[in-house]
Length: 233
Image 1: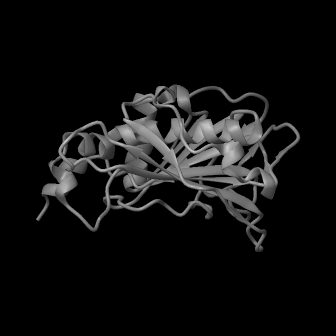
Image 2 (image 1 turned 60 degrees about the horizontal axis):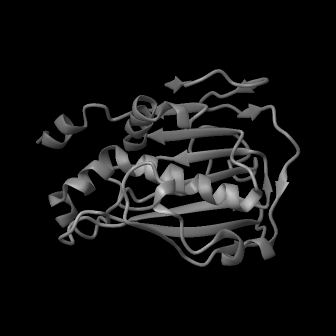
Image 3 (image 1 turned 60 degrees about the vertical axis):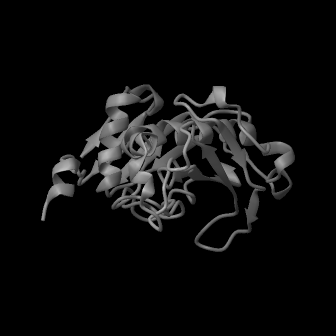
C-alpha cells in the first residue's frame, strides 16, 4: 500500500519494490570533521519536539568510512527522557544516519513486532531495488519506540503505551530533522516514512496524525487490528 500526503514537487516516483526517484538539487556534503558534537550538539531543546519530553541528549557522533556497498556516513544516537514519574516510563532511544553525500531526502523507518530495538537504518527496507537508501543519499532515522524487550514494566506506563502507539513517531521525526538541519544546513526537501507490519501500522498512524511531516508514506502489510491481534490465543 502506498499513501501520499501531498503533491510532489517536480517529478517524484515512489512505489514499493521499485526505484525511488525525485528531482533534487546538488548533494550537500558531510565530512568526518563535521561528524562531531561541536557541529551536531550534545542535546536538542525540548521545544523542538512536537510531543512532550523532559530532555533530549545526544551521544558523541561516530563516523563510518565507506565500506561498499555502504557509503561513508555519520551515525548519532540520542535519548529522549519521559515526563512521567515513577520509573516505568522508559526513554526513547533513537538513531540518525547522515550520509557523506546528502541528496536532500530523508526516511523514517518503522519497527517490527513489538519494537524494542532501533530498526536497521542501512538497508533498503523492501521499498527499493538495487541501491539502498543510504547509497541513494537518504538520511535515515528510527527509534526503539520507547522500551526494550528485555523488560515488561513499561507496559504499566501510560506514556510508554502512547509512545508505542504514536508519540514516539513524532518525537523521533522532530529530533532527526533538527540533526539533519545542523549537519547540512537544511531540512530535507523530501521526507518519507517506510514501514512493514508494526511499521506498516506506524505508517498509517503518521498519515492520520502527522501528515504534514511527510511527502510520501509506504505502509506494507500494516497490522491495523493491533489490539485484537494481541488478544488472539
